Length: 403
Image 1 (cartoon, rainbow, N blue to C red):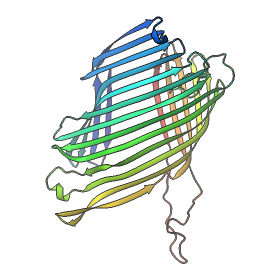
Image 2: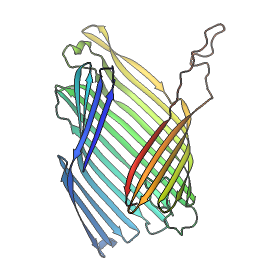
Image 3: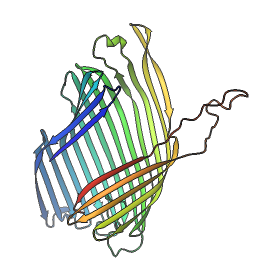
């Protein structure tokens, strides 16, 4: 296999500044598996094992084990390790600054499924992943990165196939299934990360304890095989409570006294999204068309405390001045529309998909006079609002094998 990612951005700070990046991976591995089918202890009826090993410059490997109890219950356990690397070069004011980000990834995944042969199915899963790397020293620059991701979920399905990320409309378990299909799904994922940057083995940036979390709850109801109704809630949270600093260009000794110094103190940001919607599909021999639309309610809040170094008695004494900023989205509602078109061939499909998100401005201003209260008689009018809102479009093209 091989993959390549290229990044390019002009005018980073001025017309003479630019940033370029590249990620390249070439590798290969051998895969071998074994299946044992017979009556075994603990009621086991089948054991499947799969292993792979190879290289992309470093060792790449994976192990999978699947245990089955008849057609109704099975457990899947998977472990894998691999490496990747991202190289970025930034040119500012005629000076080049290289940044090398390597990733060594170890991932463990487990899934339990019961009721696969009945109308009611239970699925539960868990994931644990670590990413770490110390970049090679390039012209004195070195980056050290650590990321941990963990999560899990549970899904209860009634007369529906397991959730598949490319389908906008759930699938019935069989063509003869009658009555509504139901799915209730909960997921939770958390991420912890640390980033350290060095120049000539001196730390000039340290981001410690940046944490993120994602909660998802969703209910799908299918009254007919071509139509689904759904509703749910999702919370995305980002916070930091550590001792982090950002020193700008500390690459000569005199920058100890003259360069800006910053500290990230506390940061909390939360976005709650509630939504209701519907999805429909039309299917023929070679064409599958799906469309999904939902109405969203947004509730957000963000607060950032950061410190800036200022002179007390230059160049010997300094202090840090605290800055506090609070913000929230200036819209409360949005409409999201997803559409997908499949062209089916023998054993493969070509899928075109797109998404449009349209924020809707809230016309109700709870405090039209602003934070200062109503203007005094004869006083100046309040400043005009500069609120703005933005939507977005995205699209993908995918070649899908086996579905």
